[in-house]
Image (cartoon, rainbow, N blue to C red; front, side, top):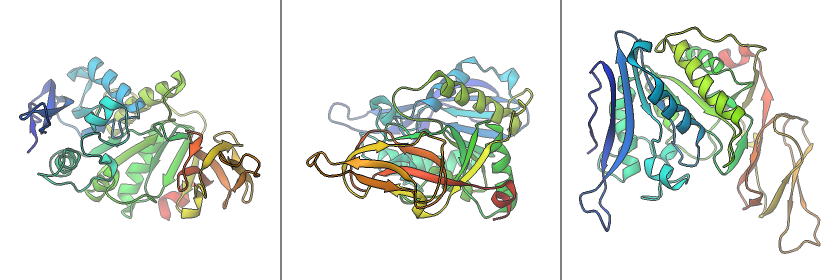
Length: 335
């Protein structure tokens, strides 16, 4: 169902669209037009770079748009496929979910060729773009719901050689923290689909919120370029790291703290702080009963505060904090 104006086998630089059929009340023959840039030259790996998986996550969208404008084919060895705003309807409305079909792009896989718009995009990635690619970069932040310590992250895939490739690429981003994470909110993730196809998958959580500091934009943009150099598709030298990153992982459900009731959430620790098991992480204050003592939120495990809820107003069941324990390189690569 998806048509593209791009010839993925053509050398040079092309700017075009993925065109997804979509009829609405004022457009019977309309298409969703997803911008895509392809830059190819000579032999080398194919790397697919994605931003805007969620429409309220801006860091990756900006980094990819800037790269697509400034990069010429002479700097590439292989092929770069750049899609800054993958869930384009969500990006236009600054929402996590698509306003067209209410779907979460990061829960839409494997997708359906003739399904809703989001599902069609997922199916196209799975059947066309992932098979073309050697590596997939999916840039995330916490959006409007979470605020992260800027970190590159990954899953612990079972294939050890693939895991090593992903680990090295994760480190190449150059973030102070690296994070090994689990999926507690359902299946159908984009990175998992790419991992299942054996790809080197690089993902991030680069801050969050509506107001993004310049320092986070710098991490997004410099880290993306460094990973592309590391993967061999962008010419240049890999920037050396300063001190080693703090490696962390949260693989148990208890590491992901969910709000036991609704109210106003107050965090009591700074992001990146060390946390002891049993330590108070924050409080939930009761809107309807300000005379009641707030609900104390306690860490069930020790480690680092990797992320916290961004909006203070919180509903029961919202994730309000994640505590990730520090691990060694050996633990990550041999677990």
